[in-house]
Image 1 (tube, one colour):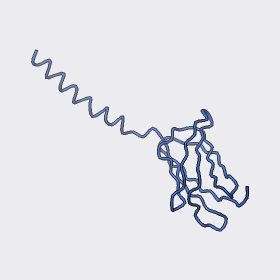
Image 2 (cartoon, helix red, strand yellow):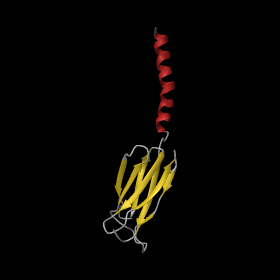
Image 3 (cartoon, rainbow, N blue to C red):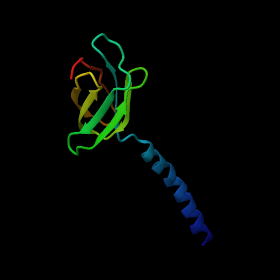
Image 4 (cartoon, rainbow, N blue to C red):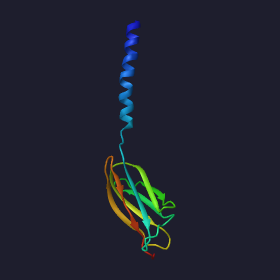
Length: 113
């Protein structure tokens, strides 16, 4: 009985590292970028929306003090990315998120409504 318990403990420790490694694999991509105005100045506080083309589910972030945004863990698939701020026209771009890939999208918001 004692040897079967020992064998079970050894088997558990043999499998445990494999399960930890599986969880460590990244199953997403990411989207990073900046938002600027036509003069090249950074746009702080712009809303950036990432909308899944298949599900319609969206995520939103605001640009930081560097005019930057980040969506760190995005499931692979087709998306629409929109950037907007009051006083500017909304800019959009379609993109495909790929597994373990970083997508970079930079926007220039044009003045207007």
